[in-house]
Image (cartoon, rainbow, N blue to C red; front, side, top):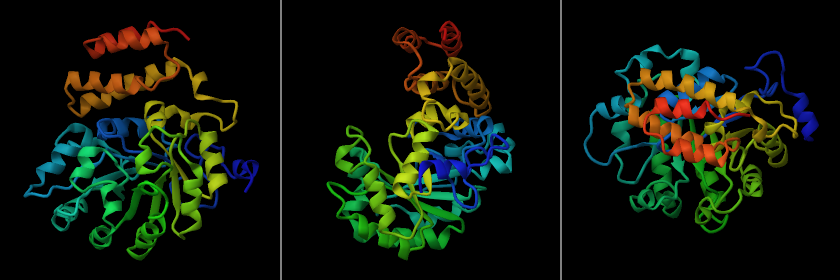
Length: 340
């Protein structure tokens, strides 16, 4: 399908509908989980301010290999905070949980706890290549140990009554594992596959390969969501047209600049033109969610610094000044001095 045809399928009546494909189900514009960033307050703030996002995953939740209690969920989600109790059902319906699982994880005991939560999406992380994760058998390590994958998927599918996805890299050193992984996903009842367009060995150093996403599309009947190096809505539409993917997932750029979902899909509208006022408004809104989530002031400052690290519209001098702030109040005051 040509880009102009896909663009014509988009509704334009409201912000929420602007980038939603007509006559096609599924999450078309998604936000990826980022460890240490996408906690519940951050995701809730983004979805409340920019409801045109279809789906957003929380940072991964490690399934323990030792004994545990329900407090692991209460601590992860902040279920005892005012924020948790105030979330609207329509917002919660767009939030997904991502699990980091190892062969030794107590999955059978853990997943039933999740079914009591109001979330409707669950994802299995098969793409994280961090050394500490792979050393414990999780993330991309499961691609090296494929015999462990069907039992894990079977437990998840039998215990989880809602949408189940897997997020993968298409291989370790090449694409030779991809057909087997996709076949297992089909056989075990996975609903969709999120494909990050880099091999595990490439980490984040190489550009994302959209041909890897296309290869997944051609080898399975499952819906594929493409991920990697997407900076604008237009780029996501182009990727979907090029590869046949049904959705586009945005990582650092989407989390750092979530207002891109409101921008026109015209190719001339680049992120660098987004006014800094968007960032100021976003951080002020985010602050209220952090406070409702009872985040400590030093934690709020750390999150602010991480988010602004990805802002291409900030000058180098401003980034340096922000990095050296010691309170979030001073951080916001310093940011207000940047002009655009």
